[in-house]
Length: 320
Image (cartoon, rainbow, N blue to C red):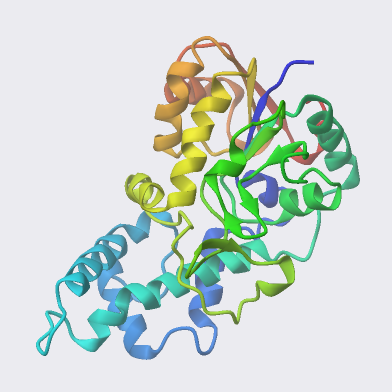
C-alpha cells in the first residue's frame, strides 16, 4: 500500500466541540482568567488591536505581532543605564508570549477524545503504510491516540517527530540503519514544546496545565502573513517544514483533513507538488456549496487532481 501524507487542521477538533476549539473563545477565556494579564498589560494589547477586549482571531494579531517584534529588537540593543523602552515595553514580548502559550494550552487540554471508530482505522493505516502525518492544530486528540497506540518508539516506531528523551533533535528524524519510519510533523508547533537551557524539550502530557507560565517560542498563532517568520525563528518548526518537503517527494497522495485552506504559506509550498500528486480534501459539509468549494480549493492549490469529500461529521471518514 503506498505511503501518503495526511495534513490535519483545526476542523478535527471543531467536529467534536466547536465551542472549545473556537480560537475566539480560547482568546477570550484566557484574557478573562485571573492572574494572566494585569489591567495595564491588557491596555497595551488593546492599543495594538485598536479596540477594547481580547483579540477575536488571528487576523487581529497583526499589529500585536509587530509590536512584539519591535520591543524584542529594542530589548536587544537596550542594555545599559538608559533603555529605549519602559519596563512595560521591556516585558511586553514575554507577557504576550505567555498569553499565547496559555491560549494554545487551553485548546490542547480538551477533556474529550476521538471516537474509536475514527482513530482505529487511521492508526491501522499508519502502522501498515508508515504514512506521514502533519498537524496545524494545537489539540492533543491525534497525538494522544498515537502515543497510546504505540505509534512512536524512537527509531523503531512507525512515525518519528524528532522528540527524544533529551529533547528535540533533527538527527532523530534521519533514517538510519534501514529504518523507514514516517514523519509526524508539528507544523505550527505545540504548547508541549518549551525552551530549556540545553534546547527544546517536550513536557509530559500531565505537566501542561493552564497555570504553567511558559513563553511561546514554538507556537504559530499570529496573523497569517507573519507565520513564516515565526516558523523560521524556531529551530524545531523550521526542521518540520524542511521535512514536509521531503515527505511530499515520496508520497502518492495528500489528504487535507479539516483544513481551512487559509494558510497561504502552506498552500504556496504544496502547490507545485500537487501538480503531480493526487489530493483529497475532507471537509465539513456546511463549509459551502459543492461547486463553490471546488473552485475555492482549485484557487488555493492549483488545477491538479483534487477530490473534495464533504461530510456532516468528518470523524465519520474511514477511507484512508
